[in-house]
Image (tube, rainbow, N blue to C red; front, top):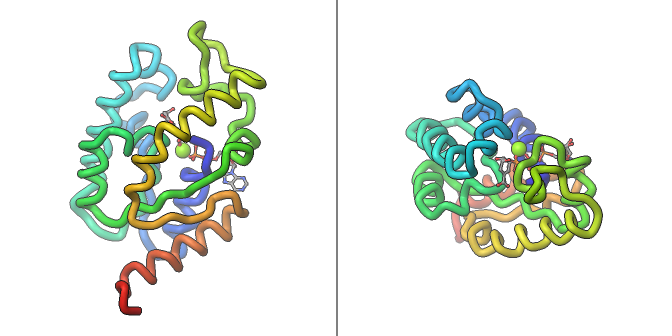
Length: 171
Ligand SMILES: Nc1ncnc2c1ncn2[C@@H]1O[C@H](COP(=O)(O)OP(=O)(O)O)[C@@H](O)[C@H]1O
Ligand SMILES: O=C(O)C1=C[C@@H](OP(=O)(O)O)[C@@H](O)[C@H](O)C1
Ligand SMILES: [Mg+2]
């Protein structure tokens, strides 16, 4: 979360001449509910809607999909995404993620048990724990790009990494 997927995705799509979809927006459009609303019924309710939305982005070409930070932690989602095209991991460091999450309002994964946004050391430790737990899943991406950089630079690096990936190992 807050690595810049929703920000960089459209910039990357522009560079590639592709369409763009943000998976959280698609979930909200398909369910008519906000992400925090879905989480309020239980994380599983959101994850089910997310898996459905992800499947519906596959099967075509010329599309950049910005997933949510938890999407590819579900092994079946990873299989679905990999079948659709290359997965790019926007790898951001803990301090940069913390600087970008803002006040964490509207980010259910960064709320405490009482539902209120975490702050200070509790927030830092939740972000660090989440990123550490998710790293083995993110590491299964086809490409990794340093997401601590400015958004335009991240999009450019992702486009270049994709072009190299397409040319194959010999290039
Ligand atoms: N490369 C970047 N440099 C600086 N700020 C960024 C960058 N990418 C995203 N942001 C800002 O960080 C916040 C979270 O970005 P967002 O794209 O929503 O991340 P994600 O979709 O991974 O949760 C937003 O306020 C966004 O404007
Ligand atoms: O990390 C997560 O599990 C989540 C990240 C969010 O998306 P972003 O990564 O785009 O913030 C959103 O899908 C939901 O709040 C759950
Ligand atoms: Mg996002």
